[in-house]
Length: 495
Figure 1 (tube, rainbow, N blue to C red):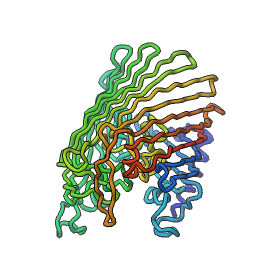
Figure 2 (cartoon, rainbow, N blue to C red):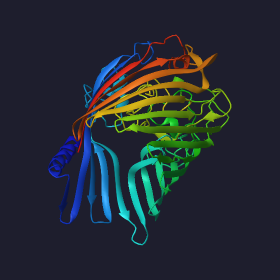
Figure 3 (cartoon, rainbow, N blue to C red):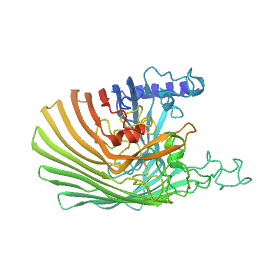
Figure 4 (cartoon, one colour):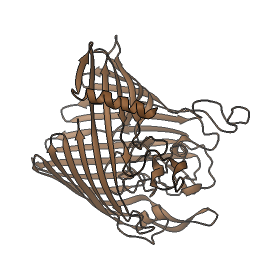
């Protein structure tokens, strides 16, 4: 049945694409989107252990449709109908694969990303009649700052309140997790639920995001967030236990989390600066006594906290030359066996970008469709600025209007030392005395060529020179230190 529904959508969209925006019986429908296909070659992503060599192709066809009933009301949806990994058959799920539930293909399970129909967003937007307020109800994007602490599609309600021509506040609430299949909000205890000793209570987030233009050179963005996962009584929390993928090793459970952040943008003539500072504090009510399978959990005293500091200056030296840099500083956990736990974000999709290999982490676990970078759930590197201090210098050249060249060099270290670890025959993880903060250095490049105004061909890649700390984080040892290399070519058309 599903394939017939998809065929119907494709047929309707084919007609729609004759004109990206058209009116019918007073109603206006606008369609845009993109198709992208890229090939990747990733070598030595485990620094020489188990090879870690992969060459593969992926693609995505995405549509965004806005259907306006009138000037005040519209419905919006964004979906992917051909998101897939070439050569991974869309009909085979884990239970039917020749090799069971193992291998890279299992990363797509439960996400409908093998050429099936997958809805990212679906919401209604309308203007409130008696106030300068725009409401959005449904599945939509929730994003704060530079995508360091929150960047996800979630289900809920948001309201934009226009305070003046240069000031706006957005407030919202989202249902992050609806307990057990949405069937029960009961707590822990046999007899309270058909699920026995499972805690079926929900996880919710509320936020406020204020933006304003100050003077002629500054845009100020301040925000606050509070998250509560009430379903932690059974020894699990939605983050990280129910995300269906592995985050970096030794991650705390998040029972509650408060975040305050400031993300200003400044422009002084040829100099532009983006920045952000976040402070996070919360509770981990799950009393882990072991790290668990795959070193999934942190052992702490129930308190979690952390911070991020991010600065990105860009100087337009000439119309064809831009000089830039990045400074990033994220807190880390100095002791994964006791004391406070470290937290740098609630939940993100990995679209915060600094390097090609180290922290680049657009993943099938959220919104991407292929492992990219050492932040992938198989390699288990850090994402965003978790326990990371980095300094980057970069340059962008634009020799012609159709060609853009980018190059960067980044020095990367751990904010807190990373210890070596081992796993014995019984699966018990032991933390060793050897430690390091030397994550490594990385050199990257990117070439964009505009074939047509909406058709872009990109070639990009990099090489990462790992330090001992990177080996300890990913493999538990510095025994392997081969240099990972990535080369990626992308063809993108936007419509």
